[in-house]
Image (cartoon, rainbow, N blue to C red; front, top):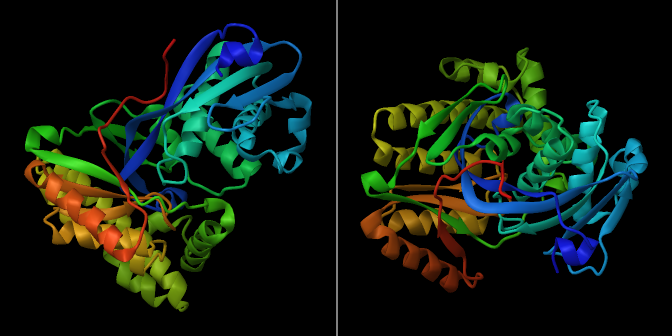
Length: 381
């Protein structure tokens, strides 16, 4: 089944938005902090055409349904609760809602999605779905949205319509990354820099290990971490935890009595510092030295932020024991994927060690692939 078979006409175009993997800077984006993601070659593609009857129709090749989901745009005014039972369709519907709430004068559309971004793997399949939708509607209706504005509206869709209190990193990565680069992003003002990231030239590879442990950020644990960070910022009298200087962390910790909030504070402040360290290492042309920073970041996510899981910890332990330069979980956590920085000559040994460790533990065989920094969202046809 494709667009023509579903809707009985040709699409007006095809748009693609990538998933992302985050090199460093985890759970810092909703704290106004710093991140460094890169876009993956895996994309969500949407074939689309306008409608003049105020109807949004969506269908995905990944969902076994005989008919597209039909959503009157008038129904979107009620917000996400009106589509609580619409499943994945809430994401494109949320984007249409956010565009209209922002004053966009677009109309309905027929949308048909195909995706190679693994779902539930911490690789931003939801952001790829949102950004591809937003870009298609932007172009179809000549809305004139810049990539960062489009990302902000897609984040609003996920926060206020779908109900996931994510930061803006995923949408910005999908909308704004460029091939061959990692995106250094200040999530407060959205200033950014494309950082050259050619690991092959240094004899290095960045592997993604999808543990196949499905994660669901809407289950409350993610929101709980965010609320804790906001409470800690309030106690310290700052707008966000990004405003706590690394040099003043010890003093800030003394001012926070709750041990759980203290751990959240410590992770965010030290993680922002790790992003700065990685940026300095890449600028200095020493990407091999990034490895230990990744492993340090994983320990912080595991012990202070408590968002890792046994499978992610096993990836890091097995990979490092087999000779990787460093490894850490990536994404929101509670499952999903890890990244492993490894010398080209050691890729096979490290990969085999990770697979063997999972087999010995009785886990499902993980999926391994290279993270090659790819192009951000664009029109492809």
